Length: 612
Image (cartoon, rainbow, N blue to C red; front, top):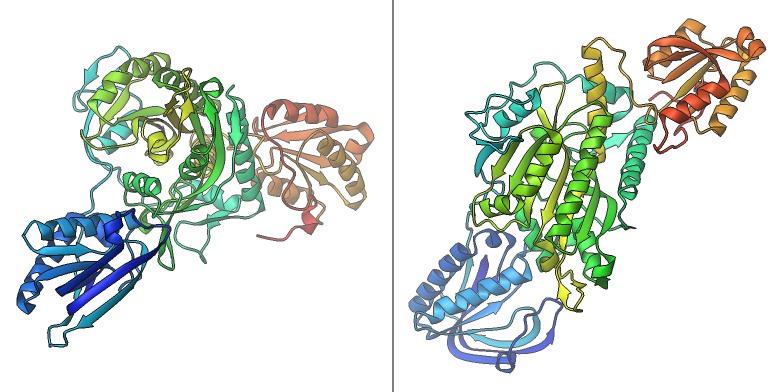
């Protein structure tokens, strides 16, 4: 907070016109006049929001002491936004000014306050003695509250038994690692060598952008193709859930002057990525919540239309510590396939919660991986209210879960929040998928629907990212490939996301046209095909195709053009299979059934490609 004190013969003001952030005032506050007054021009700054009571107390004490020193009989508080360019939100500023007025009045000193957020005309006559003009800077070091408080932990078994984390000895490697990290605070020993998945990031052109802020990624064509295919897949999953889905597209920054945005941001904690323009501070969205909720508050909804989902692959921002950023896994810019399911009541929310849990678990099973669950609960009451739901999940999965109880009294917007963890090649538990029940944001943002009696009610909202962020799903794919290598398998990606599904290798120039004809036929059936038409030897072409992780590789020479059959190297099986082109196309169609398709993001012929 910054202040300018004027010891005045008189001060008078008139409120002329409201600004968009003006407080509502009674008629008598439109005009004010004081004589023999200490006028305190006050600028409330953003840091004051973190410790409003403390800054208010310090400012009031100083104002009263100064008034006594200069002999002022009265105090006028005047909001004045021109002493700093780091302003608090209007609500915070108004609240602090009102608190100061009440505190001064409680001492018996006559006090008046000019309204906040109005264009005002004023006249003042300064007395002109040595202490009649003073400035102050109240720098209060706020103590930030740790949002993800420690709370307490229990382990719940599929039989319904509750055990302390110290007493439980079972569970998978991932589960034990999760318990050690989250509950026992035993960090894994950092690897001295480079994580193996980074080699695959380089292979597919996934990298940090050195010319941006820390934690921002860039994708060359293969990586960009993989990224977009995962985004398409996340959209297909949502549309396959059996719910009505509304696809939306939104902006990525929201003003902290808006009360629901600020309150939601305060619950998120200290990873806010903010941008300042002029006197305004905007928070970069950390998921699609702000935009979807801002839209929903204006939607005319009826119970007949619920449940439904709203979805966006949302560019999102979290100010991760620079030393903890991790390519594909922990980034400052991430892309969240964020689905919100709007439900009439808790029963309907729990039913759809189970639906989402099934899909989340199924997606990881399809990759040959398994999830272990960390279930965050906002309170013991939330646990009791949702225990039947939790036990249903445990019976289906047949695995224990780690329960994390947040401290009582913290006003989280969710009641239950499940994190789905895998164990990566570095033997660390990594959160990928998530789902949570939100009981607070509908009221916070003013989202309502009409019930059967035509009365307005606030819905329950489910938040989920079924496959995690786009980046974390890519991380899972690369980590899965690395783990194949550790057990002696030929590592590969699922065929649908392999950038180059087939590469044809013409033996010589005279075979290039035949290779192009075969490539045309494969492309007609929805296959990504490359042709190595360079002057390299066949042996080098084969090695290069395998190094590029092409799913299928075929040499095209006289024998192949004469017989119409090709000898195809299949990466997933690590062997050669003889077939014709139609059979190859059918095989790939079967392997990629139900998955999205995009064409190559680079020229088909290797001779036309640049080196990345």
